[in-house]
Length: 289
Image (cartoon, rainbow, N blue to C red; front, side, top):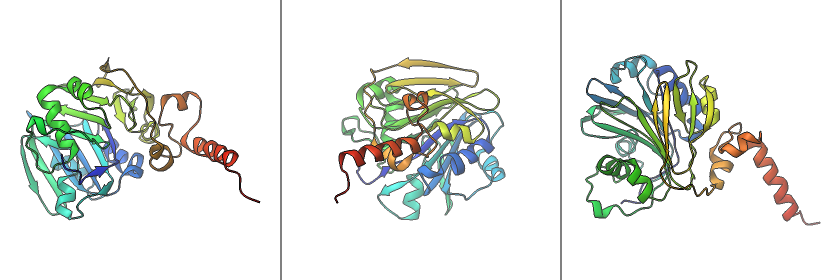
């Protein structure tokens, strides 16, 4: 796998274009400002749009996706920390990544039509996929995850690839989306409900609140969810081995997010946690006279 792409992004799935745009450009934009992407089922396939940030309004997305209200929308916002700065490379490496279908590069956006599977992913995967012989276009870790997910299923991904990823994926013909998180839980993912009570997921609990939704709980490390609009199914595929990422709480997460379930239960958001960590640092390393 190529090591030229390293990302810390925001992901989610919602049920209307307005929530998708608000989620990407409001609730999750602090997690990535380089590119944004959306994907939704249409007929027997999945359509996807990847573009530079803030490029398209709701009507443009509805037209390009051929979106029908009430269908799930994958969403992604991308923060590229290294790799090519070529505009075409940036868009081709943006999410959703897809299998099948036809992709057309249109200068400032990429349209994919009639894909059979699509995935959005937050994290960086350092795993050798070479034994599988997957054919990828960009060498991005998300492409490798998507190929493995498609070939062997999400359980195999969770059992085999240790870290680090939070994933939301859909398959043409399914009436659910699949979300899962690696066993260490280094990248956040939250289950919630939108204003109409439909189950959604987003990277942070605060992001759910900012589109008018209600956070329910953290997706547990090593857990897979099948999410339908009116219910969800949970499977703990591998035992959780929580390993918190300081970069998440100190740089990436919103100040009013809680990142982890335990912090929300304690009423300690990221701003309060940063303050408490600062006090502890002061105790351990007081200023010199």
